[in-house]
Image 1 (cartoon, one colour):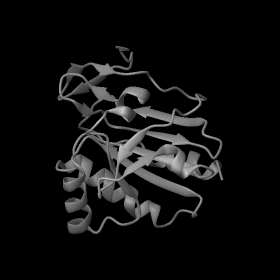
Image 2 (cartoon, rainbow, N blue to C red):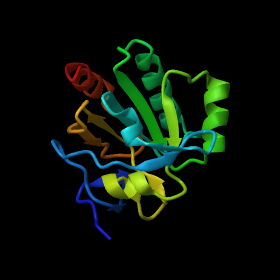
Image 3 (tube, rainbow, N blue to C red):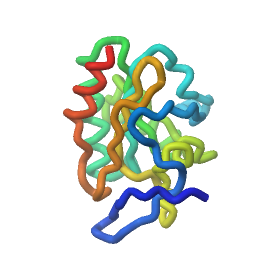
Length: 171
């Protein structure tokens, strides 16, 4: 199994990222995940759109909640050609509950729990925890990766502004 070379920590302790590290200018690999209704969703379902992948460990933590609230708020201001896909290994039921309770309706929450297809193709799987590392990937309309952030300390927020700026430049 591929080991991602990014240095990531959880509570200042190093963790191992598994899967193929995604890099700037890579062709974005298609992947399959589950939506909140247990239906399969693929990256290719968003062909022709700019995609912001907001990756996080667990919806039931403060930083992950803030990440989803921030991107949800920003998504409401974006052009229709940009979609935000929020991906974790949470169960679809937990994502659905959170979105309903918190009014998250401008982004799409997706679960990689079943097959880890996204995690392994993009190198975000934390081997020790079977959770996703925190990060953001921006993919342009031609499915080329234009921004990658593996957040070095999982307990901190991603750089929202850089990801949003690059996504807007891809229109």
